[in-house]
Image (cartoon, rainbow over the protein chains, first blue to last red):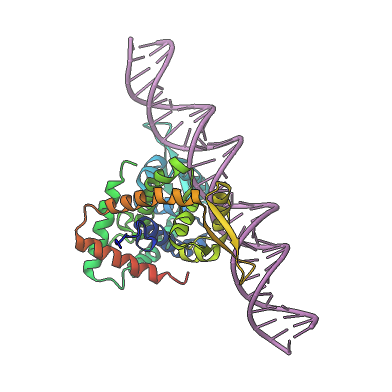
Length: 149
Length: 149
DNA sequence: CTATATTGGTTGCAAATGTAACCAATAAGC
DNA sequence: GCTTATTGGTTACATTTGCAACCAATATAG
């Protein structure tokens, strides 16, 4: 009787595991910004980009975070509605708008960013230095693999 | 002038990177089952569970894959509609239904599973054996951390 | 045994998302 | 220049999703 390996074992299937993990992590993280500021994932992401890179265009945010442009557009609109974000037309190209945070937006970011960073740090609490390094490295490689799509 | 570390660097922020990676991987993988069988992510997942664990209840699939029960319910309905899945009432508890694959469903699974497995294998091509092991282990740990929610 | 709570699963409705069409502004062809 | 193609961004529409309410079947309380 020949040994036939299971062709696909979900318990070890990377795409599946990655998806569940990403989703679990995201869900837990969302408590931080959802409860207090009523933000959804796309809004939080845009806020985070602005905190770090403002002034920046919607296009650039989309490219960096691989979010669809309509998602970015709507998140931007929502943040503006909440008074956290301000737009200012670019002089160089009047199609694009430079996005940045209002005072209120900056305050929200300054409140949330450290908490988010803390959360991410604690995720790695149980891991050894080696494990952390390998994890980072692996994610880097895989991400690069999928850069152009 | 004191050195103030950036509180949150998206470029290194694990939840963010994980999400982008999971989404990229999933997108690429989806070509395999979407093009040929017209399946979406939830349908593919249910199919994969049935191929490995059938007969199994919708509840169990949801618990294992952490999919919302409505998502499972609709994916099951869709697969049934496509003639890939069959339901049979349980004798022990007439609320639940035991799900399994039809001949057509089994054929689809037998076609897709090796391709999916192949895809996953190639994801790790660049990594050393050690790196793979550490990666698996790390994901395991993180997943366990989020088991109960 | 009867009344109440819980559970597997489905469905209605609202919110979130993706695709395609679109608009205005810039770039490229000639 | 002027005509056409491309680009940043928004919007309409269809599809997908999540939440809450629900239904029928089982389990629990008394």
